[in-house]
Image (tube, rainbow, N blue to C red; front, top):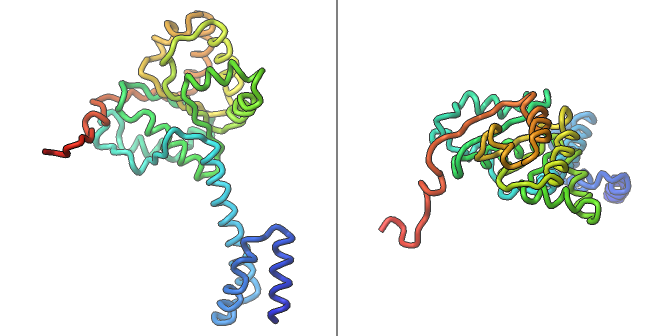
Length: 251
């Protein structure tokens, strides 16, 4: 019996069902003790393999997303953000809007939770099996400008285009020249209709023209971003300042 078990584990490994092979000994003993049917035994073996594979895939998607920090929606203090209700947050969390290729625009001053909400939704999407990419606006412009001369930049841009959700943090934080604005438009045009774009910005769409410079490009970008989107205005004082930490504690 021991020789047969060893052979079976080797065969499972050869078939690249390696995680199932690691629990085979224990599961055989459990099956004998609990009098599992053949179907029950096989189901537990296969479910374990699938569970571990999915956990590995989730970790991989999380790494490829390249979040600036790890934030979840559970960590978001909705009580501190009066412009967003718990019901609205729950609706966003359901990700139905992603299935319809809707986009989100979080507007508001620094420190009110825009990036936290964007990353939290990204993590939620990753846990549901979606591909997500996070990028800050200045990094994105650099990637777009260097994709023709850098293999790494080209690979990252390709990953962005293939993502189900693209999070662009601090949109319009920096002024663009005409070439940069045109490259940005080309990216938005490729994402339009196939990916959900989540944007954070401290400037409303009506001010984006000042940063983009070119009126025609501004209209074209707005047309694609705003067409199917929800604009969420966040208000209040900076959470970081309100809950700042200091050297001497409360003394």
